[in-house]
Image 1 (tube, rainbow, N blue to C red):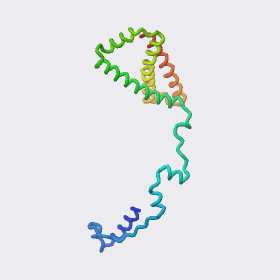
Image 2 (image 1 turned 45 degrees about the horizontal axis):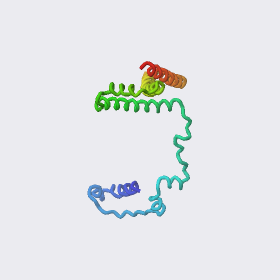
Image 3 (image 1 turned 135 degrees about the vertical axis):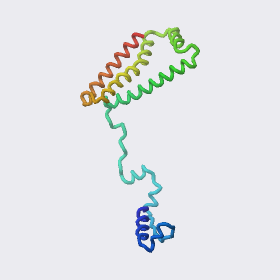
Length: 175
């Protein structure tokens, strides 16, 4: 509708006699017609309009089969967030805990947790770090243009999962 008004104004003002109309305001008799259908549909919501036009809903993520590539991408982001929380927690512990991190570790040892539970806790702490590290190396190889075929992407993905679990297991056993 605005385009029609602009076209009408330009058509009227391009004559030499009306050239002044471009620079000073003048009232032009422009007839506007608003259809009833436009007035009625102006109040409907987006979903009501789609329902009226018989448009289907977007399927969302529930129809997609989880793939290794998408799961590793989500896991890489999640492990980065977990590592940020680790760093924040360690910094706040050093800042506000009276004895610092070493006193907190001594407190956990003094509680006398069973060895399997302690091992499981150390494994849970090590897994995000090892996964993020090895998957980061995988991403750096991609940045170099290496391992970009589907076969290599899946192969390196499974290798990252295996190496991450094995190295987290070793770190939990050593410390």
